[in-house]
Length: 294
Image (cartoon, rainbow, N blue to C red; front, side, top):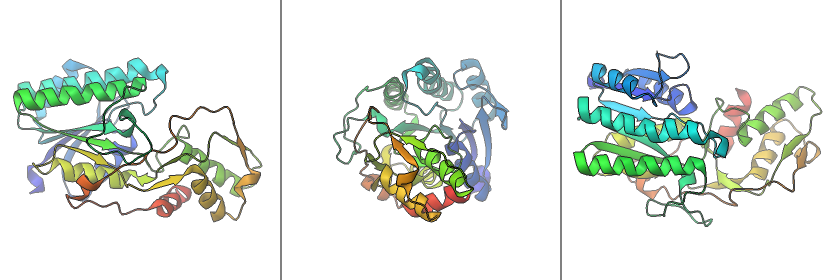
């Protein structure tokens, strides 16, 4: 069966692209990894002529669109509009023209929903709360238009917080892990953090992309929340990571009381994706162990 698959991954240099590539290798499925960095193919999903060419030449069975700058900061407004919004349109139009049987996966985000601290599901309303969420919301409506108007098989997975050793220190989980490892080697640094009572999900990127693969390979559900449904605080992460090296985190953390938080709690209701047989394999502590040992 795998011999009939041909997959293109846009955003291959990010953690989601990396772990999807590993999953496909394990299944012996051929794929092309596309990134603005040099991977299998160097290219920009925001470049319509490039996207047309790679899709028309390869006529893939599946396309995954992961390309984005994973920040909600305003400075990335135009970069994320190009990669997420324009990139989505480039893929959809190229598939319509040259490969209409291709299945397409568009990654969405927890950050595009209204968040009242309750579990977010597929019926939760969108809120354009950041430049990043504006691009994500735009890509969803573009996808729904092409699905309804042209009958394309387009799937959207709304990813909640997930991490791996491939994260940069821009992300707080990795920032803490890297500091813990340096402190274990003798560093006396102070880790500056904001509100450590914030609760979010701590999922493993490999689990999340496995859910995306399950979603795109069925024909009943086309949009699904993808997350663990289990929330932990940053303080929980600190206690566990510092506990692994026998240190008290309180001696190494300085809190910025003026830090503005985007939310107090961000949690999913993943019942729909779980109805397809998916469950995360790596829990909170196992994720911390994986990242600490990397």
